[in-house]
Amino acid sequence: MTSGPHPDLVSEVRAALVAEADPDRAAGQQRYMKSSMPYFGLTSPRLKAVLAPLLRDPGLAMVSRAQWEATIRALWDDATHREQWYAAIALARHRPYRPRVDSDAMSLWERLIRAGAWWDVVDDIATHLVRDTVLAHPTVEGLRMRDWAASDSLWVRRAAIICQVGARDRLDQELLSDVIEPNIEDPDFFSRKAIGWALRDHARVAPEWVRAFVAAHPDLSGLSRREALKHLGPLS
Picture 1 (cartoon, rainbow, N blue to C red):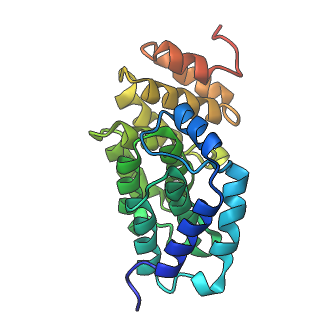
Picture 2 (cartoon, rainbow, N blue to C red):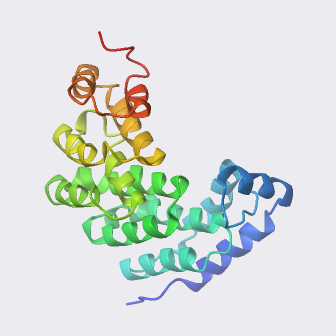
């Protein structure tokens, strides 16, 4: 069974991204993202269009879980441009490999979160790969998210806070409380923004619960409070 990365997929992805490079756009993207890693300059729709035929090519398919994980790591670890990170996430999220998005892959997602350490990659991983695993395995992953909420890494903590964004009525309110409360006094913008985002998203299906949560936590930062109540109006 093949356990190393798929060399052809890695090389095809790299070549396709180089071929699509737009240096002018790349410079603007790098400034906007405040990224030390450069961009090739692909728009999000163009990136998806470039990657889609490569990910669908049967000749470039992953023959084993080990190869899938190794290829994700190869695209990520050897990346010279940020779109290569995005390609690694696209491979992770590719529909045929969805059965592999499970508890066994969570250590890999944490590794990518720690290495990426910025909102674009962290949020994509957290609100798709991590979320899907939490929803599929709520007991064991609920415990993991509570551990992540106390992590030494801001970005792992942020991932725990937002890991149920998009879950709608499948969201575990007790888990949401448990990952927010240890971080309420965190002064970092990205933590406070994450709290507000998670609450605002849940307000779409449980507005009264969110109102009650905000009212019960007067120590929430102004940013978290404003974001949580953005579509609800002020508390009475």
